[in-house]
Length: 355
Image (tube, rainbow, N blue to C red; front, top):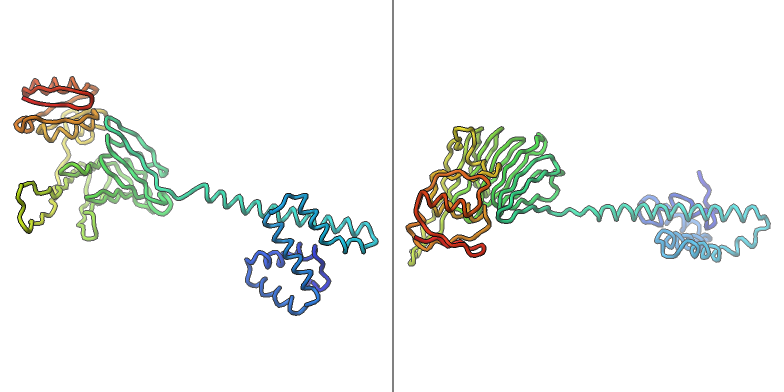
């Protein structure tokens, strides 16, 4: 048992339980020293001074030499009474050791605080502009190819507590397998849960449909919201989600009938050269399969970062089937003109199409 009744200032400072009492971090130490002060009122002044010095040292409020000077002044009387130089030297060595120990602990503590603050739990965003495609490797090893005018947001604590991402637009996913943390893709229309697989999701907010195409593995797709039904997709399957389109008549009924979204499941479109039409964009190929000019409009706008305006309703209904790779917008429009006659004018990023 340590006899603390004869402790002086430096003895208190080197005592580990006293340091914890001063720091207020240990209930047992706090209770012990409070009881000790009551039992030894003659040492209350010495303990208070030791506690005050501890706070000064641990707070690093003054440079090291000034702290030593402060210590020297506070215990000057005690040292002057001593007639043995060796005792005085030993006292100052103990004080210096305590000072360095406490200073080191404070520096370590502050370094840890800075380290924690330097890694904030922020949300990570990736996005692409028109005519831009981007390949991304996530912290878990998942590879994503982001199509034009799309964005991916990694939810907080991605790859720590979850593997959730939010998609707006179109992206190709090659998901790294992790049985303990399923990968989840959130869109405004549906959510997709996977463990490790390859698939494509297209969910542009300004298009009438959203879709998911599965190449490898298994995905579970569920409608957004708490009441969404789930669908399990197998390789080569494609699910299309038909959105509720806004009413366009000039005079709307007083109570518009609520339309529920419809879902269809088919096989993806595969060409004779084994190209999957829905995934061709990842190879910089523009695949057009029996699409009207109006349906093609959004694709061309994203692909070439332009805005297209039709001057005639009839032109919007023109149907096209074609394959392009690395062609310019002018070359694409010229090729489409060979199938259906129309005129076009390009002014900056504005494309005007007329009869």
